[in-house]
Image 1 (cartoon, rainbow, N blue to C red):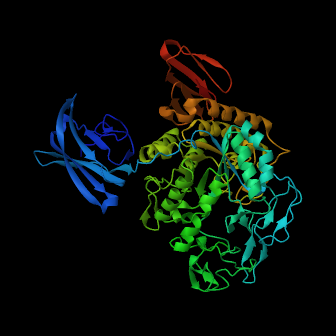
Image 2 (image 1 turned 90 degrees about the vertical axis):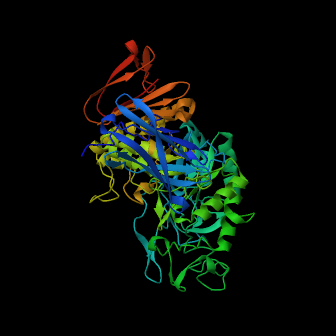
Image 3 (image 1 turned 45 degrees about the vertical axis):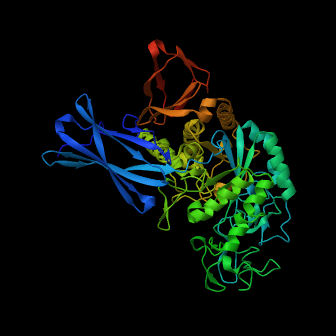
Length: 618
């Protein structure tokens, strides 16, 4: 059977076939053109559009013949998105007079609510993720009298303790109770260090009182964990950060609380009755018990993280509805936004409520969500989510960037990276694509240096506490340098997990959360990060420029950031030397990383890249 729909019949990413590009705001009239070969003899064309968020309403639109384009017929129509917000799934049918029909594949059109102005500051500059207990401490803390049976590492250079450090009366493991004592004053002491790195946003893992060192089992949403400091320390830190042009984003963990918490109070630490003590507790309706008090819904079955019922009116008032609700209070205290933990496990209207509260409190604050997949098509609990349709999330943690970048750096083709990122760019509203939290590593993944040095995203059979061999570290550092070049020059917020800039290693939790090695920093790597951070901060094309792709094949990846000036990222992830030829409108090109100048005669720049190397050309 002939390929009736070939590459030149329709391409959704080219304005020749579809305008405007990508996702559109509600009310936009989209023009669609298809170009079948004249020789096929098709006399009729139809567009079929299914509006998923309008009960799968289907609209069939005849396409008009608009003439010939060389040896191809052109059929055109318009699709009006007025009054609709959601996904549209569309496709084309061609028919000939002799009864031949041909159907295209189905395409996605994201239609979002564009009536709100979304703050655009987040995606412009460098974001730095801090795991608070492990960044920097100004004093050795005293664990007595604090929530949870905590232990303290007296030496900052020790390894975290894996596995259980105790057991509950029910025989369940108590983990993550060993602390190093990093605090907010320690972060404040290092603000100049962060500023020199080009950091413009700090993203804190949770800072509220909690029994575990990761603090994802919140014990008191209205209280800074005493090991970190108090509210005055937080306000002072925010003021000091703001004076340096650095904003602060907090981690909002609203899907679950802690077993040890003011609300559940599973260990009886708090003097008031929690849901575990009494069904008359004001917090009882927040939780879902199978058999009170010992059987209850928890996050992924982890007993220490009892899940909340986000539809409970009292819980909603507490988190975002009331005047002194959690999300409002901490914005008033100095925070500039929230990152929502497991955002796809929160109901859409709950996320919308948080978003509304944030905007009402500070119109310039942002809401970023943790989603590990393409957020435009995410289905959770059998519901297609509204994450990026406007008035929900302003951006997402871009785990697809991480996974496809690592695949490329470990030997996968650059074509895969380009295709994955273009899929997101087409599916996401522009505000979401340019506010994506791009990262190569987080607290939930292997350290990126360990990943690139071992060539694996999993620890495998190795002792999870082990470090890289010298050969693995050299390879990992070479790969990391080109990975960071991509990270810092790609649209979205380049996000650095604390310590990656000085060569920290680590397999799974807790060894990906080791204390920051202030006395053992890889200074050469740090200088490289600082160079890229400075470029990201000072080159407007890297902050706001549109992306255009150059050659992407095998080990060779190239893309341009275009604004008042044009910068070009060129990377070779393979082990062999690669040649690339680029159109270049100037007589020379300068590599901003090394200062090397290359001649570009006759509008052409010919380059030779050694294996595992990269350039940033202007």
